[in-house]
Amino acid sequence: MLTTYILVAAVAYLLGSIPFGYILVRLFTGADVRAQGSGNIGATNVARTGRKGLAIATLLLDALKGAIAVWCAFQLGMQSSSGLYAHVGLPIGYRLASLAALFAILGHMYPIWLKFKGGKGVATGLGVFVALAPKSVVLVLLAFLIVVGISRYVSLGSIVAAAFFPIAFYYLNPQQRTPAILAMISGVSVLIIWKHRENIRRLIAGNEHKLGTKNA
Image (tube, rainbow, N blue to C red):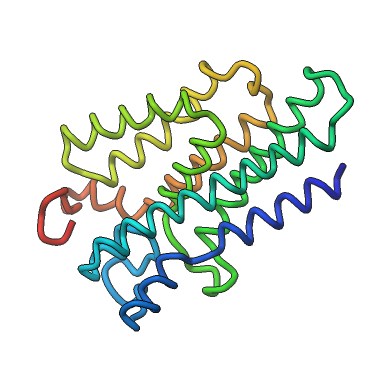
């Protein structure tokens, strides 16, 4: 079984490492998206190229790679435990799916193809959250929209949403509520918040860009 866990972690990391923002901007504009704005490869920075279509495509593809990693890991877990009782097979599937979520996020944030300099993981995080616990995502998205609507800070909304997900996950997904799974889910949230540390500094200093401003 250890081999299966290692395989899932490796494949999820490599899938998460696909730098769709970098690839799309390079293909359609010839530019390096890392040379502008925040230097990230995510949809927000891609939007700064003026190509909204590329930004939307980046958002969707980054989310999709996370969702695919989690879904494939869950299916592998269920197949590897076929013949076992559901109360045994399901936890294996959930553990592998949570492991895939963690490593897909790590891949996006630290892609091997770009010298381990990637994005903040919000879109990929959304993808893995949807695949892991869609009911929880509804509440998380609601929290995100409320925070952004009140504060006009997208970064603050992302931070609050990442912090809130483990709580929503805990209460809405009792079948998956094991220490190992909760630890990996919390790890995903911590990574996303950590990647927003510069945004947190700017929020505290009062100079973070608001939604709708020129440099947002």
